[in-house]
Structure formats: C-alpha cells, structure tokens
Image (cartoon, rainbow over the protein chains, first blue to last red):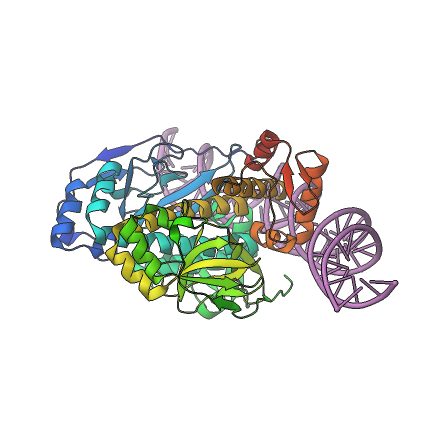
Length: 247
Length: 247
DNA sequence: CGAACTGTTGAATAAGGTCAAACCAGGTGG
DNA sequence: CCACCTGGTTTGACCTTATTCAACAGTTCG
C-alpha cells in the first residue's frame, strides 16, 4: 500500500487541425467510423480534431466534466482509477482503433494518460452528443462498443477476483496478442508499450510478482523475451491453458 | 481453489402473458422504459413477456446464443462467470428496475441466476434488436445504461484489484444502500438476498473472510445485523472512509 | 428431535506483498 | 572508447493478508 502519486504531466497536448482525409486513416476499418456512410463520415470529420500527446501526459482526468471522447490513431493510452492513498488500478489499455471515453457520461470517473507519443482523433463532448442524436448509425456503433467493453470489463473482474498471478499474466499476454491481431499486426512478437508497474496495476499485482511470473513463463518455455522488450509466444495452447486455469 | 459447480436448475421459468399495464408497473419510473413516449412504450410492451423464475433457476447461460434481455421487476438476480474448475466471479447483482443482458451481443459471456423468486419483463432478442433500430429513444437509453454499467464495472475492478477485504465489504454494503435508495427504499435496513458465498464471489474473497469482516464491522460499531439478516449502517461516514481507504 | 444448511470462529498454511540488494541497458560526458 | 550514472527490472529473504482446513454454533425443516 505504498503511495504512488500519478506523475502525469497535466495536459501536454498539441492541437492540430481537423483530420485531413478519413479515407486514408490508418484505423478507418476498425474504429467507430466503420459504421458510417460517406455523408455521415463527413459530418463526424467536421467536429473532429486531431490531437497529439506526449508520453506521460494526461488526456483527461477523473471527476472533471467530460471534455472529449475519441479514437486512438497512434500510440497507447492507459485508463486508470486511483484511491486516495495512491493505489492505482488500470481499467484498460487503448491501442490504435480503440474508442476512449464515455459518450454519455457528463463526468469521467477515470484518468487517461498517454504511455507513448499518442495521436487521437478527438470528438469534443457537446458536439459528439449532438451528432449521436442525429446519426443512429453512430449511436448503434457506440452501443455495440460499450457492450463489448462491458464484456471485457467482466472478464477482467473474473481475472482480478479469481485468477492466480500466473493465470493473470498469461491472460494479459493473450489479450494483447488478440488485440494486436484485431488491428492486423498478427503473428509478430507482442509489443509492450507499458512498463512492469503499469502491467501490475492492470493485473492487481505488484511489479515484483509480475516480474517473477514473467521469469516463470520464460523458464517453462511458454514465452520468450526479444531484445526490444517484445514478447514471443512459443506455446499458444499451453499459455491458453494456463490463462483459463486448465493447465 | 475448490471446485464449486453452479447448482442452478436449468430453466425453471413460468411463462406468463404480456405485461398488463405499464402505467402501474412497480419499476416504471426507473427502468429502461422511462425514456419512452406513450406510443413507444406501447410498442415495447408489444414484444414484452412477463416471466417468473424460481430461486436457484438459471435465467440464461454463458456461451449460448442470447435469447433475451429484460428488466427485473421483482426479486434479485446474480450475474456471474465461471472458470473450468468451478471458481466463480459474480459480476453483478440485479434488483428491481435493473436491465439485464446485452442487447447487442449475439452470445452472452456470463450466466444469470435467480436468487429469490424473480419476475422479469422479458424482451425476446430478435424483437428487441428490431425495436432498437426503430426507436432512437430506446437505443439512447440503452447506451446510457451500458455506459453506467461500464463505470460500475471499472469501480469494481478497482475494488478487486486494489482494495483490502475490509474495504471491499464496506464498499459492497454502501453500494447496496445506494442501489436501494435509487429504487426508493432509502433509510431502511439493507436487505441481503444473497448468502455469504455469493457475497464472497462478488468481492473476490472466501466466505470465511467475508464472515470475519462482517464481525469486525459489527465490533467496531459501523454496522448492526438485524434479525432477518438485514444490515443497518450505524456510522455512514466511518463506513465510507473505510470503503475509500481513508479510514 | 435430529439432519442438513449456512454462518462463525480458530489454527495452520500459502500466495503474494514488502523491503532491500543486485543487475542490466541505454544514455552522458570525460 | 569507456567509466559512470540512472531508470527500470530481476532476484532474494522475510512478512502479512487472506486462504485453507477443521470444528462448532444457529436455523430451518422434515
């Protein structure tokens, strides 16, 4: 129960202009906008602003009026909650294509911080609320995404409430692999843009325990760590069995 | 890690007719239907079926095609996930007025079981999907509910990942008090329709630990247990401080 | 009244946390 | 080019919290 104050720099964003060209956007095929027709997409682009964030900078803070939601275009974000004494729980990592923020809640109850240089296609809050009312396709897509997020959150409740340290790390690595695959970066070694501390705060563990479990998974031949801190899964079936508690 | 197979009877439901009169429904003011106009409400009622479930019976199962969503009218439901060896994580308790099930997911990833005699205003899956497309107010309301559920799920991730046993129980009792208040049963002692095992599975603890924490909270004068297994909060500020880790 | 549950309490154990030291890689500057 | 620093990471020794195992108490119900 050590006090670990979030060291995120309060806002370090660079405002850019509206996104140039949705057709050539890197995440066009997987983001919210997938569901939209040409004219709808054009309207959404009308309210969008591309913003850049430095690693470590705060994207939004808890208990403040919601200012934005948006799609991650590049980089990785962590979303987390804090207790008064600094205990931290990461509630999600967001990669390119992921939608960040709650489009209906007037105030956020979590913090969001850039882990790497991040580019977000930002939709300002009042504007997106208006568009939602006018574009059923957008609303439908957001409902779908919210339900998927809820599913994942419940899966994570199972992990945090009932899985062992080993099972948690295995589940985490498989989740990253799965998400990488979803955005078309399959097969390749898994990039870990977060450090041990952030993994620990996602898995409800300490950095030491996370490190020990990495060591175990390496020793048992389930994974291998490449030079640039990337993870290679060497035994997918075995790792899956561990993650599901059937090893 | 003891094997605890769910002992829910597979389906023990009684089908009734369509709900008689929404205007006099006990949960009219707090359920999904709040958002709907007269004609819309009439259409929703058109697809609704009131169903009754015995305590212990299964409302729906994980990994099966979604058959229904619905509003709890009476009684309490628990929603939970299982690991292969029987470890269980409750992901939510549902009280009168609460909406159960995911209206966009083709298959559920959790089980739902009646804890008491339960009455649900059921919306069959294909029908509700059609209605959602045709009634923006309904869709908006569902999006709002999904975002609120997600918020609660993240709060629970914080609890499961970072709170002590004592803090977890305190948070749980305050949540129940809060939900009771939301449906207009404020002030009164908190009813616990679930047993210690189910509380444990919600808090990521064992029954023994839950019991010990109850004893501690009683001893410290924060709560009192009434005859019928109801909890009276005697020191709200103190209990809140414990729940938030600032005690 | 006694069987079958559910809940409580106690003692022993283990999983993970805490504290502390060593390690390692990537920069910096002499 | 290499010693030195610095941050993150790994490893080890010990400790704490919650779990496990076991006995017991209270209720409900036949």
